[in-house]
Image: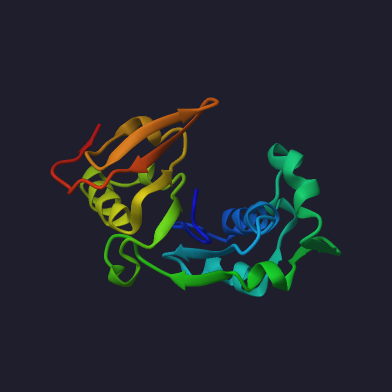
Length: 187
């Protein structure tokens, strides 16, 4: 990616573990390249779950064993305080936290802003018509050529004229094309 200020959105971030993990990766990998910055927007419909992220405090089960290969990367930015984890302020300052209903709230200020959008394990739980509206709204906020990451259970369900499915090393994600929305199909 040939951008200096990487814009990332964790669209249904819940308590923020995904947003924090993304910010730590950006801090370690993106900032390592000279003159680059990043920004992570963490949104969720539930203001109560966002409180953990606002405080920068996480419970013991927040960073599970299945992601343990990334724990050494995170250890530089997360301190253990008894049974809790505390997030380094340098990471938290690059994360904006916002309550947002992806179906209803105004997102026009973010149109065409994000290079990477993560929306994982949410669409599979909601009705088809609402999924389609949320997907259309998300796509408007991704720059042309930007990427959308869904969970492996959601990816096969999506067909959209503005999204191209890409596979790299067994990982599937979508790239936004510059075409106008014509028709979308959710299977």
